[in-house]
Image 1 (tube, rainbow, N blue to C red):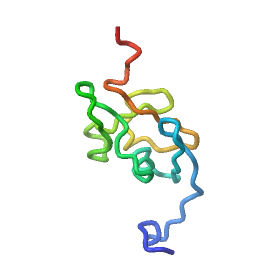
Image 2 (tube, helix red, strand yellow; image 1 turned 180 degrees about the vertical axis):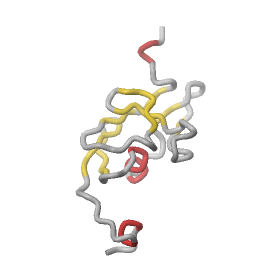
Image 3 (cartoon, helix red, strand yellow; image 1 turned 90 degrees about the vertical axis):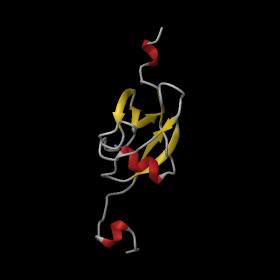
Image 4 (spheres, rainbow, N blue to C red; image 1 turned 45 degrees about the horizontal axis):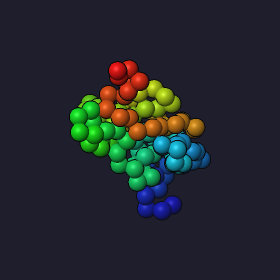
Length: 104
């Protein structure tokens, strides 16, 4: 096996599968969080702040900071660092608080 983290521990993950991010196909592995799959695809931000629209992605990686909030399968405010990726998941960039449809 190659000198990768999986190779070093002799891990043999199941076959990769596809999820989408803003319509773009992303490959994920069984056991990966959505944040890990997005990072693996070179995507570093999937949320914008309420004020100023600044980009955010994973920061702490353990579900404490809420910077990694994303809309997953139409459900806003999911912590991408904690949600396991599942085949066919549709992740979209979350704008602000994630409830734009409630704004007047």
